[in-house]
Length: 124
Image 1 (cartoon, rainbow, N blue to C red):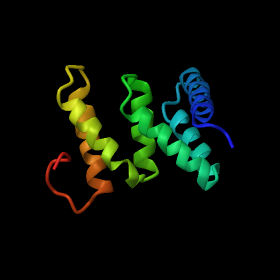
Image 2: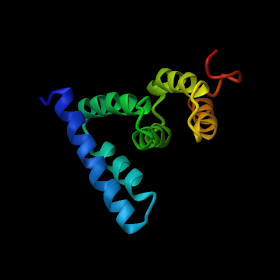
Image 3: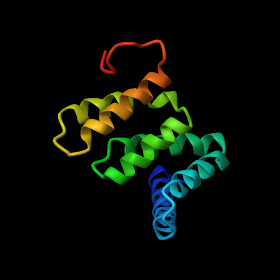
């Protein structure tokens, strides 16, 4: 069995490869679509490792990693990510990054979809 570190390295290398291809082709959805296809080919055990990698990316300082992770969490409806998304939500509330307000709203919407019975703010 592959260690988490090795698995995470391979996922990141794959992401970097498809991200470069997407940029070269000027196809903004190519990287996300490729990452989704990759995730769906994993066996259950590897999907669990992939979720951990995505959860780590979701709270990364790297905006690109964070964007991809949040997009995959949303597309794959990974409800196990709700605590991570709530943590990201709190992190974004105090962020001075220029796009934080928009990212905050996106994360709020995703939490709302994954946790539809909650109508209050994601931190409640």
